[in-house]
Length: 313
Length: 310
Image (cartoon, rainbow over the protein chains, first blue to last red):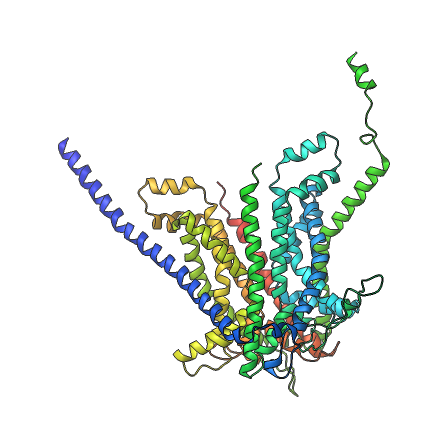
């Protein structure tokens, strides 16, 4: 009996020794994990800081109010940031209503049949198509078949196609989080399906949808390849016609057909030049793009965090 | 008596059956359906545009020649269209990117899911999300202006345009994708499996490697496939930093063009609509679409087939 106990104790000691040995691996792995994350963060931080310091001498007010020029020191991003803004207006107006509508349909209306399966497969597939393919689609379809030319409208529609899956997925996820009893309560007092959607489902999923919209817009700002593919010009020293007129009806839509350039294309153009001075401009443009997208994404992430924290059904 | 009361109660006209209201409901439902079906339209349009523009190209260049020739010289007097010259560049940069991203991404994911405290995880995940949002043109700048010069200090023979620099930067860009998808997969493994392993005396590391990672294989592999798909379709980094000269080479220190870089270089020049140069980018695009489509379907299949259910 005592012998047996002693043996058990010995075994136990052995097991403990074994566990101790393996715990060392725990420590080593945790160290490697932290090291990798820290070195990645530091590497990227160095890259970002380097970009900011390279571009810093150019980042003045004039940089935003000057057209691109053959003289690097006088060149600015006026046409690029105005072009980006106008393109984004089109993208926003197309992608947001359409994305929300599609998301609402798939979550609230779609019956389980072949059609909704087909739509689902397509939505998830579109998210995986490389952005340059959308550029080719737009080149063949919008530029030549529809005859829209290499215009702000074409670029806006192209980026809208890219943004659509993002908005759809965000809409669906936040709608799915709304419990059924909210809908049942509304139906019980006689609301129609659309009234339920418009007065309850969409307002309650507003935060999540907004998050998706902002993330999608930030992505659209940085997208370069599809906009180059449709043939956007890289050197633009004019502005599109103003969307707001001085006479009635105060709005005109000539700007939709105007040629344009956008921030990332301007940056790409300056990187491609051999002279160092233009690389400074590229770095400054890069800094503007990064600050813009980081602010938008940061706001979206914070918004999502707040929404998750606030809403408790 | 009760029935009488019910019948006497005046129903608000707002609640009575109304043709107009039902009609509006139907119209709205139809409008929503059209929006959703637009996704199907986009897919069809992509396939239609690429195929219809590529067909005249393949009348000029046979499919066999396109797929087996290793020289791509659309701008020379002897024009040859061998997509292998572009695919070699695409595969090389993708491979370098994966070499960087798979180990770093996987270790990051395991660390975040199994080792990191709640606070560390909640700090790092938003940073990863922010990195996903950095535009690729900026990463291209990093590759050309910062990473390649740095590599040149180690290996002085490296040319300004090479596949190594952009490949590495692309890898860094992809790490957050692999890390966040894999981490989600590992976190989805039920707590009881971890508790079971711990109860048997397993350490955290043993649990992570022998219990959690195998249980989350489908998600982890799917994240790798997603990463390959990203790398194959990535455009700006390689267009900026790898050079735009199509060369059939798998040597990372050579300069070469990828499929995407070729499309960009043609689009930057003057495009003659309907010319062979114009059509060639659609043939290249079709190749790219097929490659990513196969990867996406594979990823979907892996996730569906090997998902463990608890």
